[in-house]
Amino acid sequence: MSDKFDVIVIGGGPAGYHAAIRAAQLGLKTACIDAFAGKDGKQALGGTCLNVGCIPSKALLDSSKQFYNIAHNLPVHGITVENAKVDLGAFIGRKDKIVKQFTGGVAQLFKANKITSYFGKGKLLKGNQVEITGNDGAKQTISATNVILASGSVPIELPFAKFDGKRIIDNAGALDITDVPKRLGVIGAGVIGLELGSVWRRLGSEVTIIEALPDFLGAADADIAKIALKEFAKQGLTIKLGAKLAKAEVKGDEVHLTYEDKDGAHYLVVDKLLVAVGRRAYTDGLLSDDCGVKLDERGRIVVDEHCHTGVDGVWAVGDAVRGPMLAHKGFEEGIAVAEWIAGKAGHVGYDTMPWVIYTEPEIAWVGKTEKQLKEEGVPYKVGTFPFAAIGRAVAMNEAVGQVKMIAHAETDRILGVHMVGPGVSELIAECVVTMEFKGSAEDLARIVHAHPTLSEAVHEAALSVDKRAIHKGN
Ligand code: FAD
Ligand code: NAD
Image 1 (cartoon, protein in one colour):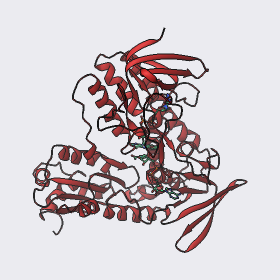
Image 2: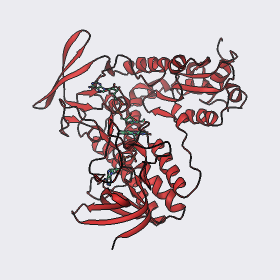
Image 3: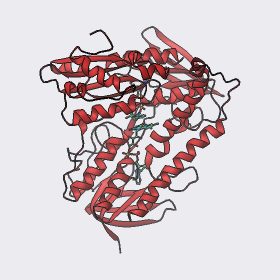
Image 4: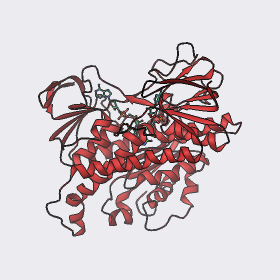
């Protein structure tokens, strides 16, 4: 006899585990099936984000920043440290410990919320039945009134630079390198390329990033991207724009690359090659032929604005569906679907979805860029403020970058905020809240910001929209 649930979630990543916990909180009998195995072969809940994404990458970014600061920041404070070394075993070990703490934490939350957890692959069958294939190959079938698909994404593989896990690596490989490569090649100057490229650059690798598009960070505001590119160049990240990889050949301990740009073909030899050219929705083995769920031209599960697949009681959330591939987007969709299932009013703030890139300086934005508003013919005004004029940033020796605020020319409503600089991953939250409440630049300009803090850059940028910033000429 098959077990019957109110809700089955397939996938225990950020989107899936949020859906499962919220469903259980709402009194629904919930199960979650996840196939991710940790380094010890045991189930490791939390998906890409906790195992090989957000958390481990931030752990390595933080560790490498400490090391980099010894030579590049501490001397300015009058502190010198000689012969600083990195113990790579301890460096990676610290990251692994954090991963285990958080994946184990999700398992504890499942227990506390009485969620039935299955370790294996789930396949949606017709009539909301789900077949589970355990890691030992044993099969069982369970069913539910509602099934939430949260199978996430995997890295895109280039046919001419296939992952071998040793020389040509993906994000997971780049989080587990055991010797600092002398030369690291990166394909793709996107979020992963910049974050993980920064980690290994700070530890001493010569990092060359090859990016197909002519513009750097096309999704970000152009002024912000320009400042960031200049800073990355100062740190020694070599970024080749408008360059397409044509060939990658592993020869002994090296990878020989051929790439082409407007000047013709170029050759580059590296010790490791990180391919970070985007991710694709992962639905391998997820859907039976007759389950009724459809995929779009990019292989993503088709859903409406409520994450419903069109098949009675079947929903899909996170990286496996349209929209940005961000953990917090998955969190919100998972929670909203559980609430819709329980008859409540779920909500996802797609228009105020923050983006953060955790480089040094950090990059963060919410809402529209100036280019988008121009294309849409929306009248706007802009206020900017540099961190160079922020006392706290100067005291920290991190006075690089700026805040740029864009408001509607007539209503003053904030349409977008774009930042590059210290701590902007945290500063962006204030702007998200203001925009979600349909606030104006004047609202932020009239709100007290503590002095001296980095948040004063947001306050001054809001004042600058009305040409009345105090600490700069307008
Ligand atoms: P996933 O996290 O991919 O989880 C899906 C889970 O489902 C996996 O455990 C998978 O094994 C399981 N699964 C798939 N199919 C089945 C099946 N048939 N049966 C059972 N289980 C199945 N986002 C941010 O917002 N901030 C960041 O700083 C950030 N950093 C990142 C850094 C890196 C290096 C990478 C790669 C990604 C990063 N992301 C970040 C993106 C973020 O990790 C993803 O957006 C997020 O994990 C997506 O969540 P998800 O639940 O949809 O899918
Ligand atoms: P991405 O889309 O951010 O960047 C991929 C880059 O590769 C693009 O700039 C693209 O133009 C380039 N590219 C594509 N094909 C190429 C080719 N053949 N040669 C050279 N360049 C090529 O993708 P990503 O960096 O792989 O990250 C995947 C996703 O993971 C991100 O889009 C993001 O949603 C998520 N992520 C988020 C964070 C964060 O929020 N801080 C961090 C890491 C990853």
